[in-house]
Image 1 (cartoon, rainbow, N blue to C red):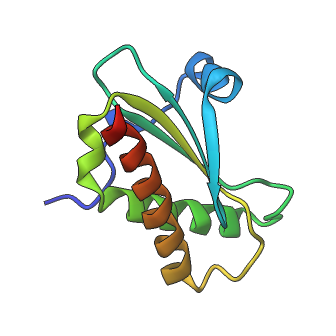
Image 2: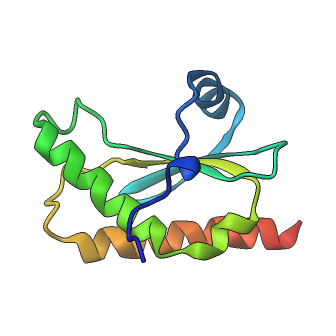
Length: 119
C-alpha cells in the first residue's frame, strides 16, 4: 500500500487556486490557516503551502509541507466531501515538533468536519 497522497487529490489549477483564495472561507487553528470552498464537481482537492517570507530555506518549507501532507493523508474521511481546501503553515516555530502541528491539523479538520455535518 502506497503512503503517498494521490496525484488526483492535489489542487494544481491556478484558476481554481485563485478562486479558492478570492471567494472561499477561511479559519485559523494556530499554527495553521484553512481556506476552503465548496466545489461543484464531486472531487475533493487539497493544497499545502508554507510561505517563503517565513521559511527562507526551501528545506524548511518542504519539511512543513511534508508534515501537513502526512497528517492530511491519515484523514481518509475527507474524500466524501466535494471541497477545495488549502492548508497554510503560519508559524516560524520549530518544525521538529510535528506532534503540535498534527494536533492543530486534527483540530482544524475537526472544525471543517463539523461545518459540513451541520449542512
